[in-house]
Length: 215
Image (cartoon, rainbow, N blue to C red; front, side, top):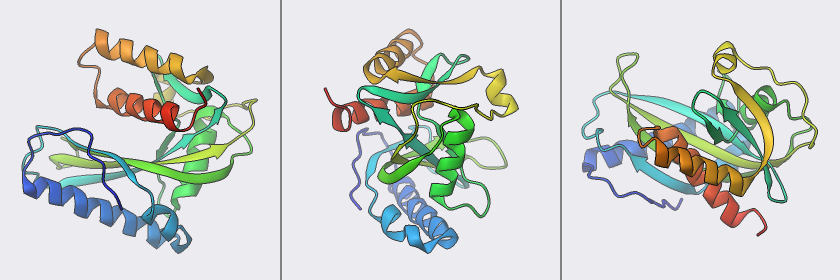
């Protein structure tokens, strides 16, 4: 597996080893659920691996695995707009107990966007993050977003949003990917403390636009 580190941060060897070991552990967890995804996950490249500068010597690290869908038609891409944060992001979310990664992907995309007939699921790459975390007795969290390309009907059905998503003003839409990128970049420029999630989402959108979307 090739690791592409796009951000150079002052980190200790211990933290780097923690991230590497955690990524392997996540792969093992996915395989326990369904061995048929071994090749798919094992060959998925790491698109970017970031470590927050405040994570220098983690004592206890929580883990979070997410599946994210990349659904494009020409220059349009199916995205989630969150009114609270005023940003665009890929649809997807965490795994339920006993789910394999692809089942989680399809469920999350269906729930968030109302997308129907999701098919042709293929691995694209994963985005790995090590962040400070102050919940559940942990001081850091290792997050891996596994991204998959897939197809779906253009006409969306009715989303099944959770209460917090409704409160945050979550909505799904097809949008020109370049417009979404420009919007997110403007938010980052206007609000330097907008957060790490919009940085992740904008990086992924830029990479998708360059590699998957026709000019």
